[in-house]
Length: 227
Image (cartoon, rainbow, N blue to C red; front, side):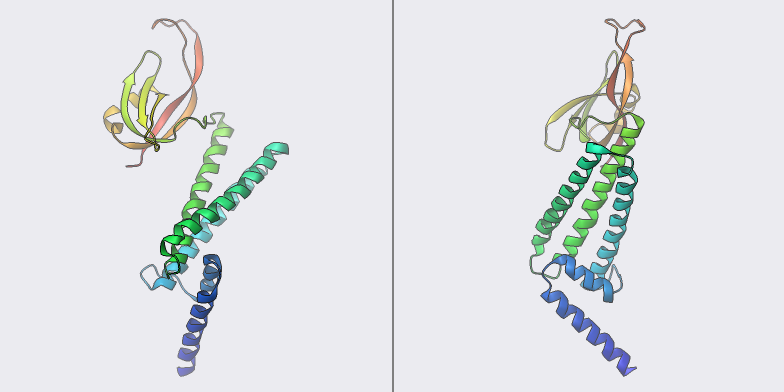
């Protein structure tokens, strides 16, 4: 029994010593993964192990989504995705190093770093899934259209619903939406929402009377309340 306890204490001391001398939060998390079990209500090391495990899951999912979709591309289109992913990795690491500096030199620095890795990686996965889903369905969203905003008004027009939003840059934006969105005005007004667009046929007549002419517009077809 004494030998087991001694070995356990020695392992903890060695781990703490190694972490203290590591040059980056990422190296610290590798050492933790070898010796500590996740406990979200435990000490700092155990919470860092939980964060490390969560990041590993997020990273695996991103790799799966990336590989599934890059295999469908070729030529310059494929090369640009590779370049974009490499640039994103640089962005991810720099962003999380910055956020971790909030606790620079403290025991929470690696926890903040790994938590940031998990969040930013999950956001990247969601972006790639959304992009390729839209691409495959033929409804790829114009990147200039707002993706998130606070709904200030929804007004029925002759050929579509008109939505006025305040985006994350506090800029007023006006976009077209389906009439079904306007019908839910009470549900969405003054709510922050995530927008989904689809290319939709709308009436292209000079009057409200049907004339058989249509044109395609990118309209909001779904609003998901964030808060």
